[in-house]
Image 1 (cartoon, rainbow, N blue to C red):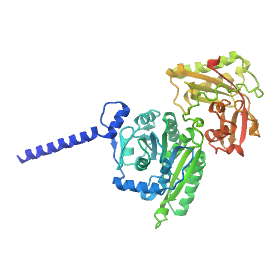
Image 2: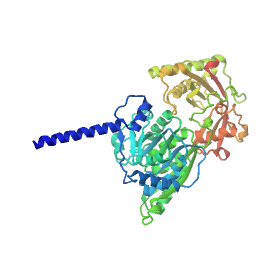
Image 3: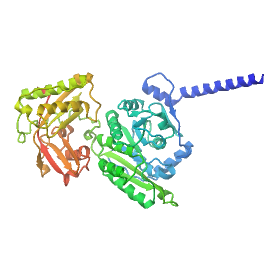
Image 4: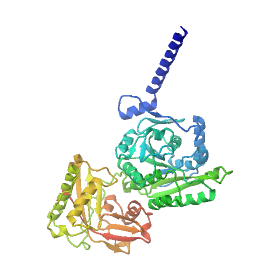
Length: 531
Protein backbone atom coordinates (compact mmCIF):
# COMPACT_ATOMS: atom_id res chain seq x y z
CA UNK A 1 0.00 0.00 0.00
CA UNK A 2 2.81 2.39 0.92
CA UNK A 3 4.49 1.74 -2.45
CA UNK A 4 1.26 2.63 -4.26
CA UNK A 5 0.88 5.88 -2.32
CA UNK A 6 4.51 6.81 -2.95
CA UNK A 7 4.05 6.09 -6.65
CA UNK A 8 0.97 8.31 -6.84
CA UNK A 9 2.77 11.16 -5.06
CA UNK A 10 5.75 10.93 -7.44
CA UNK A 11 3.43 10.92 -10.45
CA UNK A 12 1.57 14.00 -9.18
CA UNK A 13 4.82 15.86 -8.54
CA UNK A 14 6.12 15.04 -12.03
CA UNK A 15 2.87 16.22 -13.60
CA UNK A 16 3.02 19.52 -11.71
CA UNK A 17 6.66 20.02 -12.73
CA UNK A 18 5.84 19.43 -16.39
CA UNK A 19 2.91 21.86 -16.26
CA UNK A 20 5.03 24.53 -14.60
CA UNK A 21 7.83 24.12 -17.17
CA UNK A 22 5.35 24.24 -20.04
CA UNK A 23 3.71 27.37 -18.63
CA UNK A 24 7.09 29.02 -18.22
CA UNK A 25 8.20 28.15 -21.75
CA UNK A 26 5.00 29.14 -23.52
CA UNK A 27 4.76 32.43 -21.62
CA UNK A 28 8.41 33.48 -22.03
CA UNK A 29 8.55 37.06 -23.40
CA UNK A 30 11.73 36.21 -25.32
CA UNK A 31 9.98 33.22 -26.85
CA UNK A 32 7.10 35.44 -27.95
CA UNK A 33 9.60 37.83 -29.52
CA UNK A 34 11.16 35.01 -31.52
CA UNK A 35 7.79 33.64 -32.62
CA UNK A 36 6.61 37.09 -33.67
CA UNK A 37 9.83 37.61 -35.60
CA UNK A 38 9.44 34.34 -37.43
CA UNK A 39 5.69 34.68 -37.94
CA UNK A 40 5.30 31.05 -36.94
CA UNK A 41 3.25 29.14 -34.41
CA UNK A 42 4.96 28.81 -31.07
CA UNK A 43 6.97 25.60 -30.80
CA UNK A 44 9.68 24.28 -28.51
CA UNK A 45 12.94 26.20 -28.47
CA UNK A 46 16.53 25.72 -27.39
CA UNK A 47 18.06 27.66 -24.51
CA UNK A 48 21.80 27.35 -24.16
CA UNK A 49 22.33 27.77 -20.38
CA UNK A 50 25.33 29.65 -18.98
CA UNK A 51 28.31 27.33 -18.63
CA UNK A 52 30.77 29.54 -16.75
CA UNK A 53 28.58 31.77 -14.57
CA UNK A 54 30.07 31.72 -11.08
CA UNK A 55 33.50 30.91 -12.49
CA UNK A 56 34.36 33.49 -15.18
CA UNK A 57 31.83 36.06 -13.98
CA UNK A 58 29.26 36.39 -11.14
CA UNK A 59 26.30 34.02 -11.22
CA UNK A 60 23.96 36.49 -9.56
CA UNK A 61 22.37 39.12 -11.81
CA UNK A 62 22.87 42.05 -9.42
CA UNK A 63 26.53 41.26 -8.83
CA UNK A 64 27.17 40.73 -12.55
CA UNK A 65 25.44 43.96 -13.48
CA UNK A 66 27.43 45.88 -10.87
CA UNK A 67 30.76 44.45 -12.03
CA UNK A 68 30.15 45.14 -15.73
CA UNK A 69 28.91 48.66 -14.99
CA UNK A 70 31.98 49.31 -12.85
CA UNK A 71 34.27 48.26 -15.69
CA UNK A 72 32.40 50.46 -18.18
CA UNK A 73 32.51 53.44 -15.83
CA UNK A 74 36.28 53.10 -15.58
CA UNK A 75 36.91 52.63 -19.30
CA UNK A 76 37.57 56.30 -20.03
CA UNK A 77 35.57 58.72 -22.14
CA UNK A 78 37.24 58.39 -25.55
CA UNK A 79 34.86 57.97 -28.48
CA UNK A 80 36.18 56.66 -31.76
CA UNK A 81 35.19 58.34 -35.00
CA UNK A 82 33.51 56.61 -37.91
CA UNK A 83 31.13 53.68 -38.16
CA UNK A 84 31.98 50.80 -35.83
CA UNK A 85 32.25 47.61 -37.87
CA UNK A 86 33.96 45.19 -35.45
CA UNK A 87 35.56 44.67 -32.04
CA UNK A 88 38.37 42.43 -30.80
CA UNK A 89 37.93 41.64 -27.10
CA UNK A 90 39.34 39.14 -24.56
CA UNK A 91 37.48 36.21 -23.02
CA UNK A 92 39.23 35.43 -19.75
CA UNK A 93 37.59 35.65 -16.34
CA UNK A 94 36.24 39.12 -15.66
CA UNK A 95 38.64 39.66 -12.74
CA UNK A 96 41.49 39.33 -15.23
CA UNK A 97 40.26 40.78 -18.53
CA UNK A 98 36.94 42.47 -17.82
CA UNK A 99 38.39 45.95 -17.47
CA UNK A 100 40.26 45.66 -20.77
CA UNK A 101 37.15 44.39 -22.57
CA UNK A 102 35.16 47.33 -21.24
CA UNK A 103 37.26 49.78 -23.27
CA UNK A 104 35.87 48.24 -26.45
CA UNK A 105 32.30 47.78 -25.25
CA UNK A 106 32.22 51.37 -23.99
CA UNK A 107 32.26 52.43 -27.66
CA UNK A 108 28.85 50.80 -28.18
CA UNK A 109 27.02 52.91 -25.62
CA UNK A 110 24.23 54.91 -27.24
CA UNK A 111 24.43 52.90 -30.47
CA UNK A 112 22.08 50.31 -31.92
CA UNK A 113 22.86 47.09 -33.73
CA UNK A 114 20.20 44.71 -34.95
CA UNK A 115 22.48 41.67 -34.74
CA UNK A 116 25.90 40.82 -33.32
CA UNK A 117 28.04 38.03 -34.78
CA UNK A 118 30.33 36.74 -32.00
CA UNK A 119 33.19 34.47 -33.08
CA UNK A 120 35.29 32.69 -30.48
CA UNK A 121 37.81 29.81 -30.55
CA UNK A 122 37.05 26.30 -29.33
CA UNK A 123 38.81 25.37 -26.10
CA UNK A 124 37.20 21.96 -25.56
CA UNK A 125 36.46 20.33 -28.91
CA UNK A 126 38.88 19.73 -31.79
CA UNK A 127 37.16 20.08 -35.15
CA UNK A 128 37.61 21.64 -38.58
CA UNK A 129 35.70 24.75 -39.61
CA UNK A 130 33.08 26.65 -37.63
CA UNK A 131 30.07 25.70 -35.52
CA UNK A 132 27.09 28.08 -35.41
CA UNK A 133 24.47 27.77 -32.68
CA UNK A 134 21.51 28.02 -34.99
CA UNK A 135 18.29 28.46 -33.01
CA UNK A 136 16.84 29.53 -29.70
CA UNK A 137 18.62 31.65 -27.11
CA UNK A 138 21.84 32.12 -25.19
CA UNK A 139 21.17 32.63 -21.50
CA UNK A 140 23.18 34.55 -18.90
CA UNK A 141 22.22 35.69 -15.38
CA UNK A 142 21.04 38.93 -17.04
CA UNK A 143 18.48 37.13 -19.22
CA UNK A 144 18.07 35.33 -22.53
CA UNK A 145 19.31 36.76 -25.83
CA UNK A 146 17.56 35.52 -29.01
CA UNK A 147 19.55 34.15 -31.91
CA UNK A 148 19.33 35.60 -35.41
CA UNK A 149 18.19 32.28 -36.83
CA UNK A 150 17.79 33.49 -40.41
CA UNK A 151 21.38 34.74 -40.56
CA UNK A 152 22.70 31.65 -38.77
CA UNK A 153 20.97 29.32 -41.24
CA UNK A 154 22.16 31.39 -44.21
CA UNK A 155 25.77 31.10 -43.03
CA UNK A 156 25.48 27.35 -42.48
CA UNK A 157 24.21 26.90 -46.04
CA UNK A 158 27.30 28.62 -47.48
CA UNK A 159 29.81 25.80 -47.03
CA UNK A 160 30.14 22.30 -45.60
CA UNK A 161 32.77 23.42 -43.07
CA UNK A 162 30.17 25.73 -41.48
CA UNK A 163 27.78 23.60 -39.43
CA UNK A 164 26.35 23.09 -35.93
CA UNK A 165 28.12 20.93 -33.36
CA UNK A 166 26.13 21.24 -30.09
CA UNK A 167 29.11 19.95 -28.10
CA UNK A 168 31.28 22.81 -29.39
CA UNK A 169 29.05 25.27 -27.52
CA UNK A 170 28.13 23.24 -24.43
CA UNK A 171 31.05 24.28 -22.18
CA UNK A 172 32.66 26.97 -24.35
CA UNK A 173 33.27 30.30 -22.61
CA UNK A 174 34.77 32.36 -25.46
CA UNK A 175 31.37 33.45 -26.80
CA UNK A 176 29.43 33.38 -23.54
CA UNK A 177 31.58 35.87 -21.64
CA UNK A 178 30.95 38.58 -24.25
CA UNK A 179 27.18 38.52 -23.88
CA UNK A 180 26.75 40.22 -20.45
CA UNK A 181 28.71 43.23 -21.73
CA UNK A 182 26.43 43.42 -24.77
CA UNK A 183 23.37 43.15 -22.52
CA UNK A 184 24.51 46.22 -20.58
CA UNK A 185 25.36 48.46 -23.56
CA UNK A 186 22.81 47.44 -26.22
CA UNK A 187 19.06 46.95 -26.35
CA UNK A 188 16.89 44.67 -28.46
CA UNK A 189 19.55 42.77 -30.38
CA UNK A 190 20.02 39.28 -31.76
CA UNK A 191 23.24 37.27 -31.77
CA UNK A 192 24.92 34.69 -33.99
CA UNK A 193 27.27 32.64 -31.76
CA UNK A 194 30.10 31.02 -33.75
CA UNK A 195 32.82 28.74 -32.35
CA UNK A 196 35.79 28.11 -34.64
CA UNK A 197 37.81 24.90 -34.60
CA UNK A 198 41.46 24.42 -35.44
CA UNK A 199 43.14 27.33 -37.22
CA UNK A 200 43.39 27.29 -41.01
CA UNK A 201 43.52 30.12 -43.49
CA UNK A 202 40.91 28.35 -45.63
CA UNK A 203 38.42 28.24 -42.77
CA UNK A 204 38.95 31.94 -42.07
CA UNK A 205 38.51 32.82 -45.72
CA UNK A 206 35.39 30.71 -46.18
CA UNK A 207 33.69 32.01 -43.04
CA UNK A 208 34.57 35.64 -43.77
CA UNK A 209 33.18 35.35 -47.30
CA UNK A 210 30.01 33.77 -45.95
CA UNK A 211 29.57 36.65 -43.53
CA UNK A 212 30.13 39.29 -46.21
CA UNK A 213 27.64 37.61 -48.55
CA UNK A 214 24.88 37.29 -45.97
CA UNK A 215 25.37 40.05 -43.43
CA UNK A 216 22.42 42.33 -42.77
CA UNK A 217 22.61 46.11 -42.35
CA UNK A 218 23.53 47.31 -38.88
CA UNK A 219 25.32 44.14 -37.79
CA UNK A 220 28.35 44.18 -35.48
CA UNK A 221 31.23 41.69 -35.69
CA UNK A 222 33.10 40.56 -32.57
CA UNK A 223 36.29 38.49 -32.44
CA UNK A 224 36.86 36.93 -29.02
CA UNK A 225 40.53 36.31 -28.28
CA UNK A 226 43.17 36.48 -25.59
CA UNK A 227 46.80 37.00 -26.57
CA UNK A 228 50.06 35.30 -25.50
CA UNK A 229 49.75 32.59 -22.84
CA UNK A 230 52.00 31.83 -19.86
CA UNK A 231 55.20 33.67 -20.74
CA UNK A 232 57.16 35.88 -18.34
CA UNK A 233 55.79 39.42 -18.19
CA UNK A 234 58.47 41.11 -20.34
CA UNK A 235 58.41 38.45 -23.07
CA UNK A 236 54.61 38.50 -23.18
CA UNK A 237 54.61 42.27 -23.45
CA UNK A 238 57.01 42.09 -26.41
CA UNK A 239 55.10 39.33 -28.21
CA UNK A 240 51.77 41.05 -27.74
CA UNK A 241 53.29 44.30 -28.97
CA UNK A 242 54.27 42.62 -32.26
CA UNK A 243 50.74 41.32 -32.65
CA UNK A 244 49.07 44.65 -31.85
CA UNK A 245 51.36 46.46 -34.27
CA UNK A 246 50.12 44.32 -37.17
CA UNK A 247 46.50 44.52 -36.03
CA UNK A 248 46.77 48.30 -35.67
CA UNK A 249 48.16 48.56 -39.21
CA UNK A 250 45.22 46.46 -40.49
CA UNK A 251 47.98 44.27 -41.91
CA UNK A 252 46.38 40.86 -42.26
CA UNK A 253 49.24 39.42 -44.28
CA UNK A 254 51.80 40.57 -41.72
CA UNK A 255 49.69 39.38 -38.79
CA UNK A 256 49.19 35.94 -40.30
CA UNK A 257 52.92 35.61 -40.99
CA UNK A 258 53.83 36.56 -37.41
CA UNK A 259 51.25 34.16 -35.97
CA UNK A 260 52.38 31.17 -38.03
CA UNK A 261 56.04 31.92 -37.29
CA UNK A 262 55.35 31.92 -33.56
CA UNK A 263 56.55 35.49 -33.05
CA UNK A 264 53.20 36.33 -31.50
CA UNK A 265 50.10 34.48 -30.32
CA UNK A 266 46.33 34.81 -30.31
CA UNK A 267 44.31 31.96 -28.85
CA UNK A 268 41.50 33.27 -31.06
CA UNK A 269 43.65 33.73 -34.14
CA UNK A 270 40.95 32.26 -36.39
CA UNK A 271 38.21 34.59 -35.13
CA UNK A 272 40.50 37.64 -35.34
CA UNK A 273 41.66 36.90 -38.90
CA UNK A 274 38.10 36.10 -39.99
CA UNK A 275 36.65 39.28 -38.51
CA UNK A 276 39.42 41.44 -39.95
CA UNK A 277 38.92 39.90 -43.41
CA UNK A 278 35.17 40.47 -43.27
CA UNK A 279 35.50 43.96 -41.81
CA UNK A 280 37.82 45.06 -44.60
CA UNK A 281 35.44 43.70 -47.26
CA UNK A 282 32.59 45.55 -45.55
CA UNK A 283 34.31 48.92 -45.77
CA UNK A 284 36.42 49.15 -42.62
CA UNK A 285 39.65 51.10 -43.07
CA UNK A 286 40.89 51.93 -39.58
CA UNK A 287 41.91 49.95 -36.51
CA UNK A 288 42.39 51.47 -33.06
CA UNK A 289 43.96 49.63 -30.14
CA UNK A 290 42.09 51.07 -27.17
CA UNK A 291 43.69 49.17 -24.30
CA UNK A 292 46.17 46.42 -23.47
CA UNK A 293 47.09 44.66 -20.25
CA UNK A 294 48.12 41.22 -19.13
CA UNK A 295 47.33 39.19 -16.07
CA UNK A 296 50.58 40.40 -14.51
CA UNK A 297 49.14 43.91 -14.46
CA UNK A 298 46.11 42.65 -12.55
CA UNK A 299 47.61 39.88 -10.42
CA UNK A 300 50.71 41.84 -9.40
CA UNK A 301 52.01 39.01 -7.21
CA UNK A 302 52.81 36.72 -10.13
CA UNK A 303 54.42 37.97 -13.33
CA UNK A 304 56.19 34.75 -14.24
CA UNK A 305 53.33 33.26 -16.32
CA UNK A 306 50.95 35.86 -17.72
CA UNK A 307 48.18 36.04 -20.33
CA UNK A 308 47.67 39.08 -22.58
CA UNK A 309 44.42 40.93 -23.31
CA UNK A 310 43.52 43.68 -25.78
CA UNK A 311 40.55 45.88 -26.68
CA UNK A 312 40.39 46.86 -30.35
CA UNK A 313 37.78 48.66 -32.44
CA UNK A 314 37.63 48.50 -36.25
CA UNK A 315 35.84 51.33 -38.03
CA UNK A 316 35.07 52.81 -41.41
CA UNK A 317 36.05 56.45 -41.72
CA UNK A 318 34.27 56.96 -45.05
CA UNK A 319 30.73 58.34 -45.32
CA UNK A 320 28.08 55.62 -45.68
CA UNK A 321 27.70 55.99 -49.42
CA UNK A 322 31.43 55.50 -49.86
CA UNK A 323 31.74 52.32 -47.82
CA UNK A 324 32.49 49.46 -50.17
CA UNK A 325 30.18 46.55 -49.50
CA UNK A 326 27.91 48.52 -47.16
CA UNK A 327 24.50 49.84 -48.15
CA UNK A 328 24.52 53.42 -49.36
CA UNK A 329 21.43 55.41 -50.36
CA UNK A 330 23.04 57.00 -53.38
CA UNK A 331 25.03 54.15 -54.91
CA UNK A 332 22.46 53.18 -57.53
CA UNK A 333 22.31 56.59 -59.21
CA UNK A 334 25.60 58.17 -58.12
CA UNK A 335 27.63 59.42 -61.02
CA UNK A 336 25.26 58.07 -63.62
CA UNK A 337 26.02 59.63 -66.97
CA UNK A 338 29.26 61.21 -65.75
CA UNK A 339 31.68 58.56 -67.03
CA UNK A 340 33.78 59.58 -70.00
CA UNK A 341 33.66 56.12 -71.44
CA UNK A 342 36.59 56.27 -73.79
CA UNK A 343 39.55 58.04 -72.29
CA UNK A 344 41.09 58.91 -75.62
CA UNK A 345 44.84 59.27 -75.67
CA UNK A 346 45.84 56.01 -73.96
CA UNK A 347 43.66 53.71 -76.09
CA UNK A 348 45.57 51.84 -78.78
CA UNK A 349 42.41 50.81 -80.60
CA UNK A 350 38.70 51.46 -80.57
CA UNK A 351 35.99 48.83 -80.69
CA UNK A 352 33.16 49.38 -83.13
CA UNK A 353 29.51 48.79 -82.22
CA UNK A 354 29.43 45.26 -83.60
CA UNK A 355 32.52 44.24 -81.64
CA UNK A 356 31.02 45.61 -78.43
CA UNK A 357 27.80 43.69 -79.06
CA UNK A 358 29.78 40.52 -79.71
CA UNK A 359 31.68 40.79 -76.41
CA UNK A 360 28.43 41.34 -74.51
CA UNK A 361 26.90 38.36 -76.32
CA UNK A 362 29.90 36.22 -75.39
CA UNK A 363 29.63 37.28 -71.75
CA UNK A 364 25.92 36.48 -71.48
CA UNK A 365 25.99 33.21 -73.41
CA UNK A 366 29.00 32.07 -71.40
CA UNK A 367 27.29 32.72 -68.06
CA UNK A 368 24.07 31.03 -69.21
CA UNK A 369 25.89 27.91 -70.37
CA UNK A 370 28.21 27.71 -67.38
CA UNK A 371 25.39 28.02 -64.84
CA UNK A 372 23.37 25.41 -66.72
CA UNK A 373 26.08 22.81 -67.46
CA UNK A 374 29.30 23.89 -65.72
CA UNK A 375 31.08 24.00 -69.09
CA UNK A 376 32.84 26.83 -70.94
CA UNK A 377 31.60 27.66 -74.41
CA UNK A 378 34.06 27.74 -77.29
CA UNK A 379 34.03 30.73 -79.63
CA UNK A 380 35.91 31.57 -82.80
CA UNK A 381 36.66 35.19 -83.58
CA UNK A 382 38.60 36.72 -86.45
CA UNK A 383 38.30 40.44 -85.69
CA UNK A 384 41.74 41.95 -85.11
CA UNK A 385 40.47 43.87 -82.10
CA UNK A 386 38.87 40.84 -80.44
CA UNK A 387 41.91 38.60 -80.77
CA UNK A 388 44.45 41.12 -79.46
CA UNK A 389 45.67 40.57 -75.90
CA UNK A 390 44.44 43.22 -73.47
CA UNK A 391 42.83 43.47 -70.05
CA UNK A 392 39.10 43.42 -69.42
CA UNK A 393 36.58 43.43 -66.58
CA UNK A 394 33.06 42.05 -66.53
CA UNK A 395 30.60 43.71 -64.16
CA UNK A 396 27.22 42.23 -63.25
CA UNK A 397 24.38 44.26 -61.76
CA UNK A 398 20.93 43.34 -60.56
CA UNK A 399 18.34 46.02 -59.94
CA UNK A 400 21.05 48.63 -60.34
CA UNK A 401 23.15 47.11 -57.55
CA UNK A 402 26.50 45.39 -57.97
CA UNK A 403 26.19 41.58 -58.20
CA UNK A 404 29.76 40.69 -59.18
CA UNK A 405 32.84 42.21 -60.78
CA UNK A 406 36.12 40.51 -61.69
CA UNK A 407 38.72 41.27 -64.33
CA UNK A 408 42.22 40.83 -65.65
CA UNK A 409 44.32 43.99 -65.78
CA UNK A 410 46.91 43.15 -68.41
CA UNK A 411 45.32 40.33 -70.38
CA UNK A 412 47.24 37.20 -71.31
CA UNK A 413 44.67 35.82 -73.74
CA UNK A 414 42.79 37.16 -76.75
CA UNK A 415 40.24 39.75 -75.61
CA UNK A 416 37.19 37.60 -76.37
CA UNK A 417 38.55 34.75 -74.23
CA UNK A 418 39.40 37.14 -71.40
CA UNK A 419 35.80 38.41 -71.45
CA UNK A 420 34.51 34.83 -71.48
CA UNK A 421 36.61 33.80 -68.48
CA UNK A 422 35.95 36.99 -66.51
CA UNK A 423 32.21 36.59 -67.07
CA UNK A 424 32.34 33.19 -65.37
CA UNK A 425 34.48 34.59 -62.55
CA UNK A 426 32.18 37.57 -61.97
CA UNK A 427 29.16 35.26 -61.78
CA UNK A 428 30.68 32.58 -59.55
CA UNK A 429 33.91 33.70 -57.86
CA UNK A 430 33.43 37.22 -56.47
CA UNK A 431 33.79 36.49 -52.75
CA UNK A 432 31.59 39.44 -51.82
CA UNK A 433 28.53 37.70 -53.23
CA UNK A 434 26.97 34.27 -53.43
CA UNK A 435 27.26 32.72 -56.91
CA UNK A 436 24.67 33.92 -59.41
CA UNK A 437 21.81 31.47 -59.84
CA UNK A 438 20.33 30.52 -63.20
CA UNK A 439 16.93 31.91 -62.21
CA UNK A 440 18.51 35.36 -61.70
CA UNK A 441 19.82 35.68 -65.26
CA UNK A 442 16.81 37.56 -66.63
CA UNK A 443 17.48 40.30 -64.08
CA UNK A 444 21.26 40.40 -64.54
CA UNK A 445 22.65 43.37 -66.46
CA UNK A 446 26.13 43.01 -68.00
CA UNK A 447 28.80 45.67 -68.44
CA UNK A 448 32.21 45.13 -70.06
CA UNK A 449 35.30 47.31 -69.57
CA UNK A 450 38.14 46.87 -72.08
CA UNK A 451 41.37 48.32 -70.73
CA UNK A 452 44.21 50.27 -72.30
CA UNK A 453 47.88 49.55 -71.50
CA UNK A 454 49.06 50.83 -68.10
CA UNK A 455 50.94 54.10 -67.65
CA UNK A 456 53.03 54.75 -64.54
CA UNK A 457 52.62 58.27 -63.16
CA UNK A 458 54.70 60.42 -60.83
CA UNK A 459 52.03 62.97 -59.91
CA UNK A 460 48.48 62.05 -58.88
CA UNK A 461 47.30 65.25 -60.55
CA UNK A 462 47.56 63.30 -63.80
CA UNK A 463 44.56 61.25 -62.68
CA UNK A 464 41.30 62.41 -64.24
CA UNK A 465 38.32 61.19 -62.22
CA UNK A 466 35.89 59.37 -64.49
CA UNK A 467 38.49 58.99 -67.24
CA UNK A 468 41.30 57.00 -65.63
CA UNK A 469 41.29 53.72 -63.81
CA UNK A 470 43.97 53.57 -61.12
CA UNK A 471 46.26 50.85 -59.80
CA UNK A 472 48.32 51.30 -56.64
CA UNK A 473 51.19 49.00 -55.62
CA UNK A 474 53.25 49.15 -52.44
CA UNK A 475 55.35 46.24 -51.28
CA UNK A 476 53.36 43.06 -51.82
CA UNK A 477 50.02 44.86 -51.80
CA UNK A 478 48.04 46.25 -54.71
CA UNK A 479 44.55 47.39 -55.63
CA UNK A 480 42.63 48.66 -58.65
CA UNK A 481 39.59 50.82 -59.37
CA UNK A 482 38.02 51.01 -62.82
CA UNK A 483 37.36 54.49 -64.28
CA UNK A 484 33.65 54.33 -63.49
CA UNK A 485 34.04 53.55 -59.77
CA UNK A 486 34.88 57.07 -58.55
CA UNK A 487 31.96 58.88 -60.23
CA UNK A 488 29.54 56.11 -59.24
CA UNK A 489 30.59 56.56 -55.61
CA UNK A 490 30.68 60.36 -55.83
CA UNK A 491 34.40 60.54 -54.98
CA UNK A 492 36.91 63.23 -55.84
CA UNK A 493 40.53 62.28 -56.59
CA UNK A 494 41.73 62.19 -52.98
CA UNK A 495 38.69 60.26 -51.72
CA UNK A 496 39.18 57.73 -54.47
CA UNK A 497 42.87 57.24 -53.62
CA UNK A 498 42.09 56.80 -49.92
CA UNK A 499 39.44 54.20 -50.67
CA UNK A 500 41.71 52.42 -53.13
CA UNK A 501 44.48 52.13 -50.54
CA UNK A 502 42.26 51.13 -47.63
CA UNK A 503 39.67 48.90 -49.26
CA UNK A 504 41.38 47.36 -52.26
CA UNK A 505 45.08 47.24 -51.36
CA UNK A 506 44.80 46.76 -47.60
CA UNK A 507 47.13 49.70 -47.01
CA UNK A 508 46.78 52.75 -44.77
CA UNK A 509 44.43 55.26 -46.37
CA UNK A 510 47.25 57.75 -46.99
CA UNK A 511 49.72 55.21 -48.44
CA UNK A 512 49.38 56.81 -51.89
CA UNK A 513 51.23 59.91 -50.67
CA UNK A 514 54.66 58.29 -50.38
CA UNK A 515 56.51 55.23 -51.65
CA UNK A 516 53.72 53.74 -53.75
CA UNK A 517 53.76 52.95 -57.47
CA UNK A 518 50.67 54.35 -59.19
CA UNK A 519 49.47 53.43 -62.66
CA UNK A 520 46.59 54.76 -64.71
CA UNK A 521 44.66 53.36 -67.64
CA UNK A 522 41.59 54.16 -69.65
CA UNK A 523 38.73 51.89 -70.59
CA UNK A 524 36.08 51.46 -73.20
CA UNK A 525 33.02 50.79 -71.04
CA UNK A 526 29.80 49.54 -72.59
CA UNK A 527 26.69 47.77 -71.35
CA UNK A 528 23.74 45.86 -72.67
CA UNK A 529 21.09 48.56 -72.52
CA UNK A 530 23.13 50.90 -74.70
CA UNK A 531 23.62 48.63 -77.70
